Length: 267
Image 1: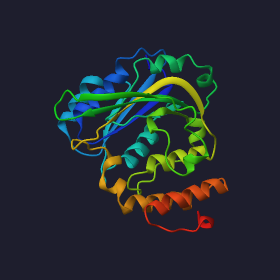
Image 2: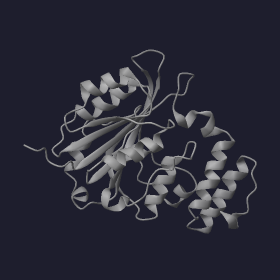
Image 3: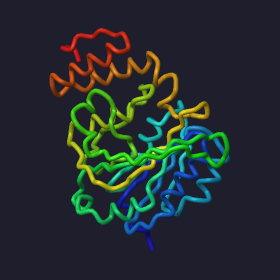
Image 4: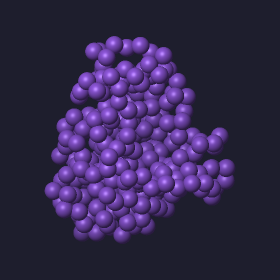
C-alpha cells in the first residue's frame, strides 16, 4: 500500500555535525504526530557519522541527500524545497530542536487546516559543546507575539525554525546562495511581502546558542559580524524596500553604528 502524501515537509540542512543532527532528528521522531510528514536531510559534505545517524533515525518516507557544490544552508534548503511534497514546509537547523509536543499541537490548529502562514514562540538554550553531553548553562522561553512588526525590515526578529510556511504561499521564493549569513532573513522578508504570518502562542523550536569558544554557529562566524555582514544588510535593504519612513531611518541608524553613512532616501 502506498504511503499517504505528507502534510508537512521538514527540511534540515547539515554539515558534519552528527551529534547535533541526532538531537534534532530525535526531537522530531520522538513526537506523536497525527498527520503524515517527511523529513528531508541535505548534507553538503561527505560524512559517514552523519549518514549513520540518518540511517538509524529516518523512516521509509524520509530522505537524506548528499549534494554537490559549495557548502552552506541556502542551496541545501533550496534542494529540499524542490524535492519536498508537503502542504506545509518547516526548516530546522541541525543544531536546534523542536519542543516535544509541537507536531500534535500543529495538527489541532484550525489555522493549519486553513493553510495559514504561522509562527510560534521558542526557547533559547545556552550551552557549551566541550563534551558530547552539551552542558546547558541557561534557558529562556521567548514570547514572540510582539517581535514581528515592521522593524523586521531593519533586522531579523524571529528564528527560521519558528515558522510554518504554507506551500500555496511559497511560489518561486528561494534562499539566496550568494549571501554570507543572513539568507534566512532575506527569505522571510520575501514571504512577508506576500503575507504576514499569524502568531500562535505555543512553544515551537528550541534554539541552542553557544557563547563560548566552542561555538560553530554561522551567526557567530566572521562573515556574520565583519564587513561582509554590512554588505549583506545593504543588499537586503536595496532588495527589500522600506515600508515606511520610520524603517528607512532605523536602517540609516543601524548602518551609522558600523560607520557607514547612507542617505535614508536610498534605503
